[in-house]
Image 1 (cartoon, rainbow, N blue to C red):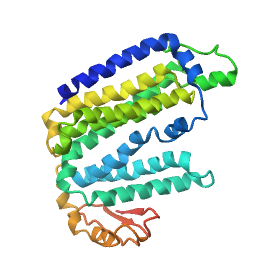
Image 2 (cartoon, one colour; image 1 turned 90 degrees about the horizontal axis):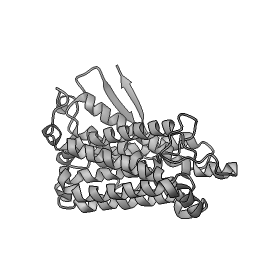
Image 3 (cartoon, one colour; image 1 turned 180 degrees about the vertical axis):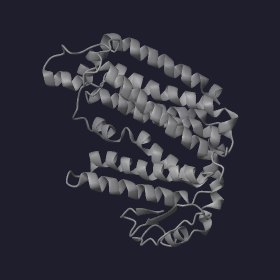
Image 4 (cartoon, helix red, strand yellow; image 1 turned 120 degrees about the vertical axis):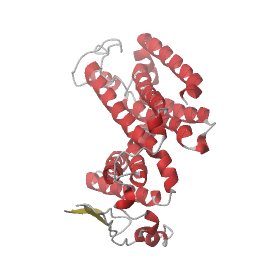
Length: 337
């Protein structure tokens, strides 16, 4: 599979090397020329650019929950879906919700998003979920590695942002990307927004796990590349980053996805490997027979829904019971021991 992305990878790294070379001489000049923080295009992508990385946990958790081979993996999928959705709600609300009660409403909205994701996931054939199971775990690992790389470099490089130079009234504190400054509170290099948008490169995994995307490797590269490039350009317009910042941010995400592609070729990740010794059927009913989904689907997703109590019966010390009063109010999860 990695061989099919050979030409896109060559093009990507060629552009990366050119960008980093140009940035040595023109990083500051480009930001001075492009700076326009009131630009609506740049503001919109500032607010939405990192959505690909914020959606990984909710979507991956949903896949893992329904494709899990054991109780602990299923619990991990559930926590990833709900916890990731809560964080996605926090991220979304930071830019789109009014300040009053923003934190509470954002998290509730996010958890509700997670519940809807799980409900939609229940309608997807289990066979497809099992095919995507390995890709879901890979997505979570890649996102974690990306966050560690980006935040680690930000702290070590300590590069001052262009907008902070403008606030200071001079460019004396500007440094090249070749010069690490150490931990000083500045976090311009590399760009987290661009790296977050670059998580969309995980789309390149799809041809390996689903027949629908086989033969469409070029499309699976071009769409993330265009999106990430637009987000990167917007960060220069906002005065938040330099050319070298966004180039490195995108390259880190792309490189991690290539590593994931290489690892995905291993037999362990191409099969529905049993990570846990207990089959899911031993502790949870098949979702087709679950009364929640037949009850919920009867409303055709239109009217406000009063969700009945769903109890998963498990031959274990744990019984997890989600309770949800309405579709607009996320559930409360009670663990009885």
